[in-house]
Length: 582
Image 1 (cartoon, rainbow, N blue to C red):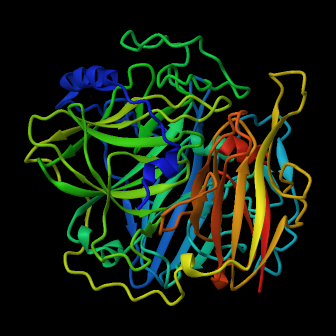
Image 2 (image 1 turned 180 degrees about the horizontal axis):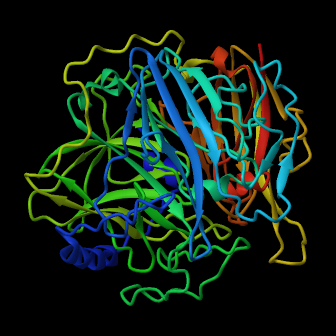
């Protein structure tokens, strides 16, 4: 078994004792304290730094159906940033949607976003709904503007058509009637963690950074892996956001770093040190952990208790490398699923667990793993280690996320996995890794300054099929970059010709990592998001990954997209269109 972290997070080396020394002293001042949420009168209320991490509200399917009413809202903040949120009919923010394979989901989405500049002409990507009628009804609008919204059900294998998981044409405007999504969770959908978020081309980053996201759970993961049967489970959505204290100097405990540089988007550029101002602040279940002191949120557990943590990296641009520390000692984390798919779906033992001491999670990805609480009176932290995003990437330094406190009276989590579940039926299709690809394609990431002689110029971002001209994604085109056939399997070799890390993601399906930097890897499990290493300008060949793409599911028929899941890259054109034909 390969080292999950080395494949997912490019072999980061920096983790400092400073991380524990400083955050450990912080723990002593925070233990036992709870800060309360800001006024519920706010449109998108959020907790204060240092607050207790509460579970998102859960909406569960009943009798084979889940009905949900969500309203997309936004609110301008005094610092100039904008919060975005999804509110359900009972006032809960970003509820977790819990469904079973085979369930019918009927979700209505109302756009109640407040126009940011009501007197200004709309900034938009305009494109007509060319496929609206043949896809079973009119979509909501032909404009994608800063005030438009929609939903993408990230990771689910549902058809890429209007009213299901179409993001190419579905755009809901303020004042439109509620838009209905209606789809059935496939009977063979792997049990695990998925998520929902807006996917408005050109404006996705702004809404996701503002907090518009939530978790989806397809029930039954304990049926796939009996090692987690009976465990309490926790859902943690880690988001990033614009810095709350952008002008603050680093804390005095931080080592001196080179002069802070900023990229063309105004974010802190990678320092290569593991420290310095981050590009974005992080939050966990909306509890912010702001620069420069990173006052951690608080997670309560019973002493020595084991739980299944289900973590979504819902960040717009931030990579995570999660680690749990008892004192200075990294703790084992028992990985059981990635990107919604149990690791043992290819014939590995029914109680398979891959034990790691840190887990790299790109933006958009998910990991589900076993965590054991510390004994009483033992300081413990959930941290993210620095991630080397390349000389052209943003700064993702070492920092704390949450203080883990223990008490015999700690409340029980919302949910607990079944103790004696029935095993899942065996998969009907052969394991993806054993299927020979019908063809091999080559693609590459690249970037270009619009004004080559101006280093502060805007950047165009591309993902290009080898032999085609690099061009930013055009939602008006409708011409696919790739045409694949239902029932086939393909290998895609994806190079990175840029100096920053990219996270490749494709809608409607999962894939298997076959090679990493040209070397075969032993990763017998599936993903829907993977890092592609950055080019350092020195090696003779561009770094690459080789992925085995699975087009055997009828739900993949249609037009859908693949892109970098760093949302400023996606919005900037680093996206392609694939058509799967029957």
